[in-house]
Amino acid sequence: MKKDHTGSRDYPIKEDMRWIRREWRIQRIGEYVLIALVILGACGLFSKGVLSNGSARSPDGTIQVEYERFGRVESNMDMRIRYNAPVTDRFNVTIGGGALDNLQIQTLQPQPLEAVTIGSDLRLTFSSRDTGLDHAIWIGLQPRNPGRIAVSVSSGDHPPARFTQWIYP
Image (cartoon, rainbow, N blue to C red; front, side, top):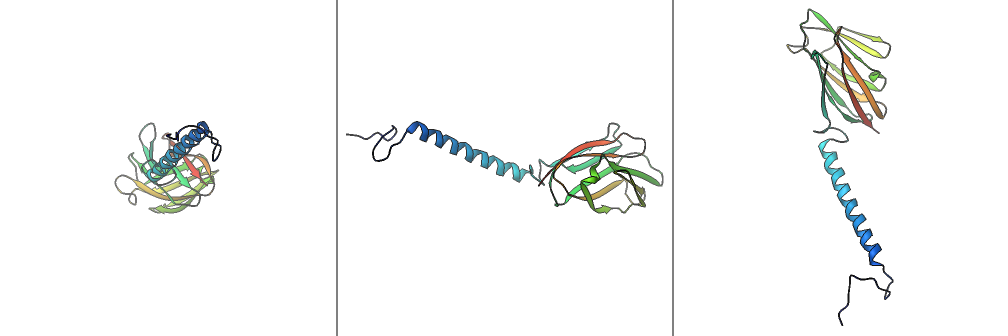
């Protein structure tokens, strides 16, 4: 007599194959979820990577910001700001939206001629000779708190470039 290994049985151990099949399905789904999380993490869902790279532009195209969408508390994040408007000897860039309440500036290249805080905003004044032809500013940031951070970058009377960063613990 041939034994059936797919049906429920009472001997030697009581088994309900319906529940065992459900457990197998749950394990298989869990494996797929873990594999997807590892792949998404490697692509930048939780920090640096392709999924984390973002860019924002002001409505008139004057300000363009390249930034990281996702970061981790106390890890370094990069931001590049380009000012695409004709400038005289000096121009201002304001980082606002309350972003600097949660982000600490680690590096700033080139060095500004002047840095002034206005409420929770930071206005930086640069010499157009120091920023190159595309008026690029490089900022190294370090998040202090987890959560959503709304950032705006503006210059003078031009409308700001706005974006959001998500900071994981």
